[in-house]
Amino acid sequence: MPKITFTEANGIVHVVDAPLGKTLMQVAVDNLIPGILGDCGGSCSCATCHAYIDPAWQGRLPPPGEDETFMLEGALGVRDNSRLCCQLDVREEWDGLLVEIPAEQF
Picture 1: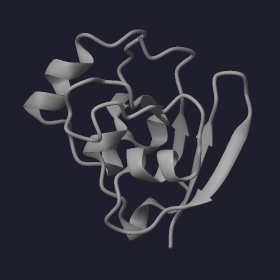
Picture 2: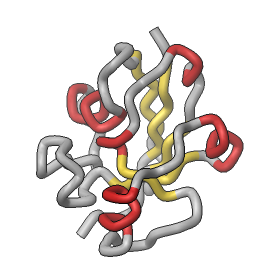
Picture 3: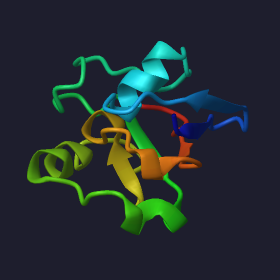
Picture 4: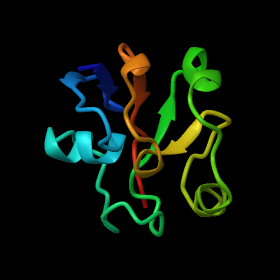
């Protein structure tokens, strides 16, 4: 089972086991990671699971789809490495993935 590292905006680090097939949003919510809200339950309609993917990992994840890109346009603090965690299904090869949580989601 891959280990994913979530880093809060204040620097607190959470390393969690991520079951295959769950989304990064589900993993964060299941592990009570502050800052990943997932208000829409993972339907790509709220952007409250916005996070920053470590730049070294960007090319190793699938590209964002049209819906994700559209939702990110309304998120706060969007960067080139911004993603919605509800759109990323955990894969074995993501062991060691680094995810940074924005200071605010809305």
